[in-house]
Every structure is written in structure tokens, then in C-alpha cells.
Length: 397
Image (cartoon, rainbow, N blue to C red):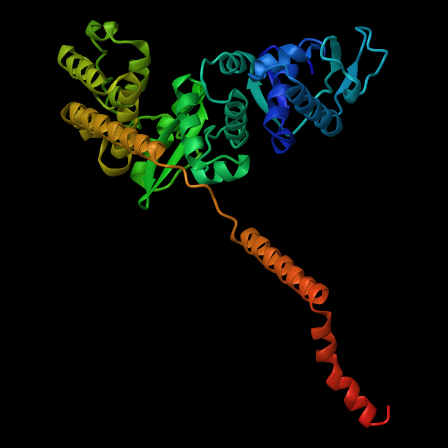
């Protein structure tokens, strides 16, 4: 596993099928081997990072995970730092340090930035960080985008739960944890009365914001990036007047907000003190991140439903109203999520398995009864066979 100037590790997508512990251990080993493809392995340290005690059953479970990694991903373990003496996982001792050689991953992998992995490993939560990592990697692995596409994905909660073997409510809880710690970003959009989450890395959340705003207008989710607005100018002989430059009053607006407002500024929005006051009030109502979503939603609506000359006026008249609506929507969604998470979890029931077990129990019971009849009432069995014997004698057979 080579060092990268972007400081990330490559985690094979096939690893997600092995198991929760295998994924977590590989991530730790992979991070340690980032420089030259090798790292030190010490079982008590790994057990501590997994959040379990250094007991025999836990050590055996870890050895099983390491053995699976060795077979599936060709990890090699050595007892010396020169890596000349190969050692089998079964022969490893908990008190000894070992050395691991991690093969280079060339294709079909998930890119995980080291800073994000460190953030996840050091999250202070009661929930399993190994399971949290598995869900994080699954979501990242679903983001398959070309260079000119939005880096988003939108799997259903049930799809994630089935793929990684979690309960849907657990998936929702882990989503909130990952978002709270700025590892993933997602927005919920309602399409045909069905709620759907749109996900991205936290660093690429602008793609989610734009896709969500667009989907609310078009009714579907698109990965296609929209080109920046280019104002067309009719070619005439008379000179075309340039739009007036913004006054200095806009200089005290945060640059990140100015970039979000670029569409409306090009459409004629003047950033004077009155506009700034409305922007500040809208941000105070719903927060900065939600304000950016509000602006993107308003931009999408303008693009699709009104001429350019009305854009600036629409923004000025509706930005505070839309901020209040956004706040109400977020709070309603939060209450709905809390209600779902507080409901009792109903485990899935395998009816086929239950029927088979019931059938086998009945069969065993019937066989036992038949054996008891043969054992305790042999005369009854003989009497039952007598009519047949007499009938054969009558026929002279």
C-alpha cells in the first residue's frame, strides 16, 4: 500500500463482504502501512481499538478475522522486522509483536482519507465503531461518479440495512452520528410521496445541496452538474451597458455566502444593507448550512419557472419565508427520525426456518411414539400382522 500525496488509503470493496471485524482491522492495518506497505501488529492494542477486553474468546475471534484477511486479501504475517520468518495466524501469541505486509490495491477500491478515518476511530460513542465504519464505507462505495458528475448516491435505508446486515433503525442512528461528526452529508427529499436520502462525503456536500434543490423542482435526482450561469447578450451595433458594480457594502458578507449568491447577483441582485439584513435574518432562522440549501432551492425554481428579470425580486421577497419553511421541514424530519428510533425494534422472523423446525420436532415426536409402541406393546404388533399371515396360509402360500 503506497504512500499518497492526497493521504488516503485504498480499501477493497470486496472486503465489505467479509465481516465487521475484518473491515475494522484492515482499516487500522492499512492506515499503519501507508508509508511502505508494512506495519506492526500487536493483538492487545487491536483489541483495545476494537473496544473489547483481552480475553481468550476475543483473541480467538480476532485470529479468525486475521485468518480471513490473510486468505481473502493475501495479507502476510511475520515474526521478525526483516520479514523473513513467515508465521501462521493460529500460532500467534498475544504477548508478541508481529509484522504485516499489505499488498497494493490497484482497482475496485474505496478511497478513505486518513483524516476522516482518524476522526471516526476517535469518536467517543457507546455504539460499535466497527459497525459505524462498515456503514461509512458502504455509503462511500456507492458513490460512483464520473469527473463531470455530482459525487452523490441515494440508496434506500432498507437497501443499506440489507447489504450490511443492520436493522433499518440502526442505519438511521449511524447516519446521524456520521453527519454530526462531519464524515458524511445527506439531505432528505420527498419524491412521489417517498422520502429518500441523498448522500456524499462531508467535503462534497455542495453536490447534495444542489441535487436536493433540483429534485424538489424536477421530481427526480440527477447526478449531472449544472453549468454556471452565462448571461447571453444580443449583438447590436449600439453599445451594451455593463451591469453596475456592487457597492462596498457587500464586502462584509462572508465569501462562502457570496459564492452561493452568485446566481442571483448575476441576475441583478444588489447586495446593499437591506439585502444583507434579510440574509442575516434568514441565516439566524435556519442556520448557515440550511440557508445555502434554501438559496439553491430558490435558484432551481428560478431557472425552471420564471424569466431572469424576476430573479432578484423573487429572492428579496421570499428568502426569509423560505428560511422559515426550511427550519420547519428540518425540525419535522428530526422529530420523525427520533420517533422511529425510539420505537421498539421488531426483529425479522424466518417463517420457513420456523416451519422446518416445527416439522422436525413433530417428526421426532412421532418416531419416538412409534418406537415406544414397538418396545412396550410387541403383542399388539404381532396381532396386527396375524390376519395377513392367516390369509397367506389360506391361499397355500
